[in-house]
Amino acid sequence: GWINTFQGMFSPFMISAWAIFLFTQFFKTVPQELIDAARLDGCSELRIVFKIMLPLSKSVTIIVAIFTFMGMWDEFLWYLIVTKDYNLMPLSVLLGLFTRGEYSSYPGIQTAGATLLTLPILVLFFVFRKFFTEGISMTGLKG
Image (cartoon, rainbow, N blue to C red; front, side):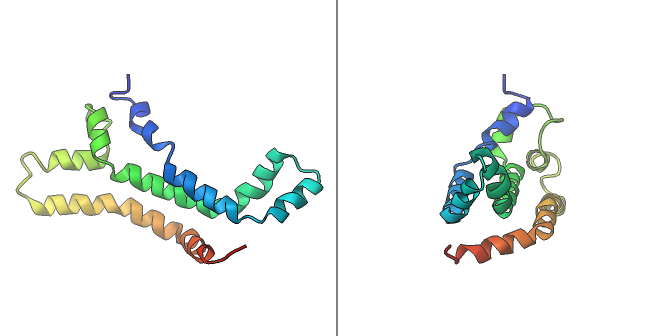
């Protein structure tokens, strides 16, 4: 039942080993004293997660979301396997199928399509570039 459904298209991208690793490494850098101070102030574990850990991990969350979106946006083979309906196919698959047909001898159309496919990724990068630089500057620091 996953053929031609959004569940079949997006389910493999919901959990990423890379994202789990990135969050684990980030949470290891949070000082234990900060968590202990929150416990002394009477915070429950759930409140520590929502009031301390999640706001601290904003840049990591945005980076994981952007890279997950990039992986989904650039994916070709999985979408080609699970979608047979042209209305559900993402643009990368449609461009691949489009360039095999009567327009296969027009490299200008293929290049224009590939350029248009990169625009959302570039827009995301320029909108969230502050979080990329924060993530890079935090990698060399030890708490």
